[in-house]
Image (cartoon, rainbow, N blue to C red; front, side, top):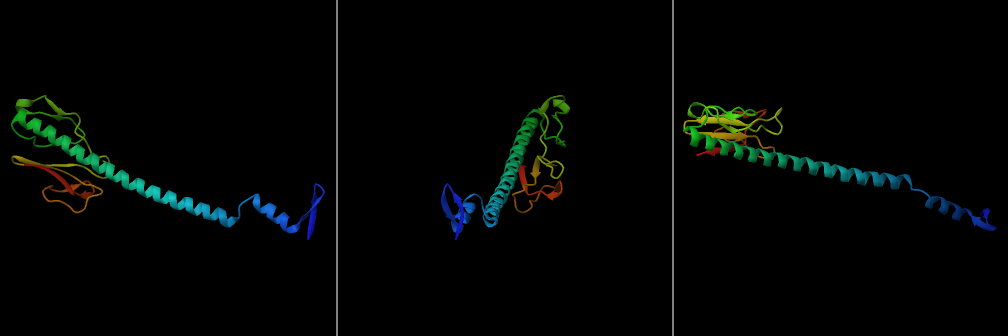
Amino acid sequence: MVGVFDNGFPISYTDNVATLRQQGFTLIEIMVVVLIIGVLVGLSVGAYSGAKKVAWDTRRKGDLESIKSALEIYRTDCGSYPSDVTFGQNLVGSGICNGNTYMSPVPTDPKPAIFSYRYSLSGATYALCAYLETGSSSVLGCGGNCGTQVCNYRVQVP
């Protein structure tokens, strides 16, 4: 079947349809591309979320080690560990160390609205506890919850 003439040459109907198809994409092709992009975005968001949890847990472990170091310096100077640690406030000596600042401020959990650190003094030892989002079960010796969750990571001396 012959259609419109182009520059004096006849164009067949099938050639005309083929030309039109080369100018755009079909609905199926567009849907497949959108589906592939959606899957890739979904996978990357999931990986990002997991990486954030690992980063927060790494920070929590680092915070507890920093607090532990400050508490050891406090004990060396003052002869004992502090009776209480207020997270988010300065760790200031009392008694013979009155006025010395040992940590300014004591770190808080990266997500303080949900989780918190815990300090538990027992005679000559103490435990610092936190909830790790990538951790597994709870640990004993923390004396309570770490915010809305049961503590599952502990730094204890000795």
